[in-house]
Amino acid sequence: MLEKINKPNDIHKIALADFPLLAEEIRQFLIESVSRTGGHLASNLGAVELTLALHNVLDLPQDRIIWDVGHQAYTHKILTGRKDGFAKLRQEGGMSGFPKRKESDCDAFDAGHSSNSISAGLGYVRARDLLGQNYRVVSVIGDGALTGGMAYEAMNNAAGLKTNFIIVLNDNNMSISKNVGGMSSYLSALRTAESYTGMKINVTKTLKKVPKIGPAIVDTMRKTKSSIKQLIIPGMLFENMGITYLGPVDGHNMRQMMRLFNEAKRVEGPVIVHVLTEKGRGYTPACVHPDRFHGTGPFDIKTGKSLSAKKSLTYTDVFSDTVTALGKEQKKLVCITAAMREGTGLKRFAKEFPDRFFDVGIAEEHAVSFAAGLALGGMIPVVAIYSSFLQRAVDQIVHDVCMQNLHVIFAIDRAGLVGADGETHQGCFDLSYLTMIPNMTVMAPKNAWELSKMLEFSAYMAGPCAIRYPRGGAYQGLEEFQSPVQYGKSEILYRGEKTAILSVGSMTEVCEQVYREMKAKGENPTFVNARFVKPLDTGLLDELAKDHSLFVTVEENVKSGGFGEHVAVYMEACHPETRVLPIAIWNRFVEHGEVDSLRAKIGLSPAEIFSAIENELEEEKTAEDGYKEQK
Ligand SMILES: Cc1ncc(C[n+]2csc(CCOP(=O)(O)OP(=O)(O)O)c2C)c(N)n1
Ligand SMILES: CC(=O)[C@@H](O)[C@H](O)COP(=O)(O)O
Ligand SMILES: [Mg+2]
Image (cartoon, protein in one colour):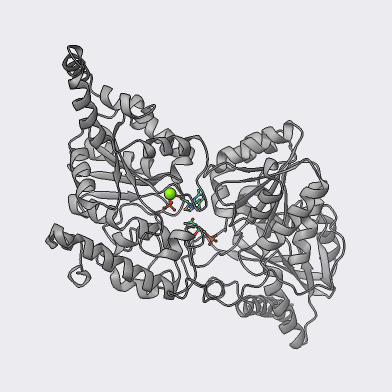
């Protein structure tokens, strides 16, 4: 069957009776491919029939499907002629793990971050109607993504719509870990109510049998559009908002789903189709551990065991150990995650201090304002959020935390390049969006030891502070440098002359190699671990300006608004004779690939940094020689 699917709409050639076999083959293909490359498996296994049914009732690329987060769109990629792309899934130059408009005209919207699909879909709908065009728009959102505030803002806005807009709620009762909150409980209540469509017939039949008044009641109920639903389905939240609700329907039954999708196409207004799916469907290890197979590295298909090399200690592990230890001594410490309990390393803290742990769902904005309230109420909140997801909450950091100078600690994981997830997930902006805010302190550790010390330090600080650290192995080197963390003070690793390298966090490990290469070449640079990006250690900058003509700043962040720019502005004002070479990410989004290879590509590998410095020194020398000659 799969061989017959090579381009968009090939699915229309498949007989309905053959769909179960096609679904089976797609699952087998996904399991085999992802076992080799790694990727988001469990959500994709759950969404196979849902995607087949959607593609069958739609006409792509004319119709638009907007996938929320986009991590569940692998079957969509197969059905739109990208089967071969799975050989290099999420690898440099290969196919992205998320929908990308540049990859296919069947990808209607680039995705990666959660809960925006209804907004984007509604935008398409309004544009379609204004331009007098005629195509279907379908937003597919998971129950986890439905915990995010944007989804409600969009539904609120969609409520008055008079033209067709289909929202498919893919409900597998899971976020990455167990889904949380009131909406999740509400969906559970809907789920446990028998399929509405089946129930409607039974209720009508039963009522009709009630002597005398039965038929009259049925008649009256029919006149009120959704009153039978009101009887059966608790609350009818969506209908009360003005969005037609269809379902729940078995998300692994193609016929039932297609019937409902076709019914949804006839609704003149927004309509939500509630589809029940099983995360990990068809692969037992993924059904048993949907969290572990949400995103996975290569694994052995038979056992489900990971084939990745044994994991060394990660920065997330260090955060996990330290924050749990801090929780023991500091009873006011509370931890908050936005649906990333495992990813941010808060599982242990949650287990030891369940009352002081909060999973707020995929709601980064709320997490930050919630932390502000906790701080004002007398607690010390630690908000653990990935760098790219925290972008969502910049105003809450400005308005609710920093403006009131509250003691909230931001533990920012995945800061810097994250690799396979690509553009949407690289943590390249946090130094810029945090250092611009008054009252905020920003730190970055050079190694495992320093992360732990910075966290301890931050627990006893005043005011807001952020510690940013990268994905993956925690650097264990430079362990001989253990000067205590002091507010706003950098750490001199090696004192030399003429050239000073000032590195931020993850780049210190990289710059250690640069330093050694320069020494081997007979140069004697100074090497500074910045530690604090805000405030700048201006005392040290003043001192180094006395015997250094070149400052080289190195950071895994965009140049604009980053450490280098702050140093350059200070030096320009106070020491204009010292040149500053800022090495950072230059005005671009960085696609997916291996971190080391991406770093080389964007000039952040040891070799690239070394040659950038040597070029700068060469230019300096040429300019000096020219000046002497002129004289
Ligand atoms: C803004 C944002 N925060 C967090 C994440 C991390 N994340 C990716 S998928 C996911 C769970 C989504 O759950 P759901 O929508 O139900 O999809 P499922 O994985 O169950 O298919 C989370 C928390 C994200 N992508 N974007
Ligand atoms: C789709 C998504 O946003 C997450 O699943 C993300 O891929 C997790 O990243 P980590 O693997 O770095 O935890
Ligand atoms: Mg889910």
